[in-house]
Image 1 (cartoon, helix red, strand yellow):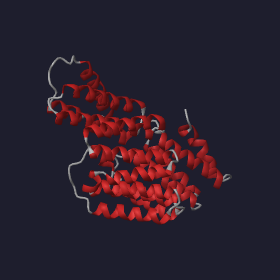
Image 2 (tube, one colour):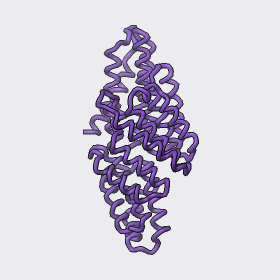
Image 3 (cartoon, rainbow, N blue to C red):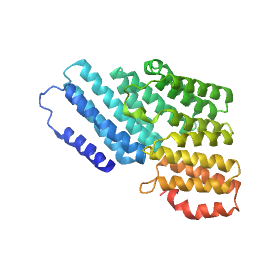
Image 4 (spheres, rainbow, N blue to C red):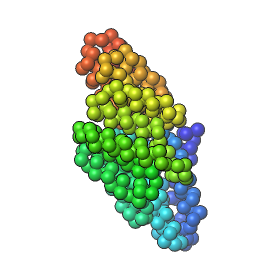
Amino acid sequence: MLRRTFCSLTVGAAAAAAVPSGRRSVGTADVIRLREGMSGLTALDQTRGGHGALERAALARAAEAVALQQRAASQTVRQRLFSLASHYTASAAWSCIDACQPDRARTHLDQALRLAGMAQDSMAQMRVWNSTAMLAHQCGQFGEGVAASLAAQATTTARRDPLFASLAHARTAIGHASRGDRQPALRSLGYAEDALTRAHAAPRPPWIGFYGPAELAAITAIVRELLGEPAHAEAASHRALAALPATLRRNRAMTMVRLAHAQLRQGDTDQACATTGKAFDLMAGDPIPGRMRTQIGDFHRDLFTLAPTDRAAREWGDRYRTEWSPR
């Protein structure tokens, strides 16, 4: 189903780009048509993770939106098209972050932020700053990560909608924890939890569908792990897995690897190895995204540092090394 959706998205974008422009003005119907492709890309990402074909499909849609704005029937339509271009470019950036391609991700984020400015779209700006914070953490630029998270908090969208405010505070907590600042990290987690309790059901774009109590629990596990508190990290990972929908396959697999890391840090090697096995089972049939591959690599390194002669560790290495090692 997802493969059929992806093919239709790609073919649709190519076909639309090939239609002669003529003199027809572009209106709301064109905006709606272009917006409909966003859900399919989001679903594909949530199931399989970031990869090159997803990035290319998102960029094709962004290019289509930018081309169409030249014939926009009104300034409102033009801004909506710039907004769509920003969101699609942000989708491409996120795909690169998940695939651990930081240079490509940063280029796309710069473009997405520029498009969001032309669209005057606070939602798109919030999305870009959120991804920028994640990229900064991935690259070890923790000060930049905190700054990007604070920028996300300052957007109109975060100020008006507690759900987005919660996400921005959660990203800030990761930034503080990465720098070893325990109290600011826990304080930001508290702000995130409080904001989430005030968030009510409302129409929101597909990209934010991943965030809720389960994702906040997963982020809490990251924060606790960074602060050197594996027991708290394990408990948070269990809460996340209990609440994460089965459709978020990549997120569940990554949370399982994080749970395994917390178990390993507490000396439970057998259980940690078994837990990562479940993560591999979840991703069976699709390549492992780069971000998850890095996470498993970290687990492998710590496994053979903490338990180099353990039988479970040796068996884990024999069974899974070829499944996650770089190709």
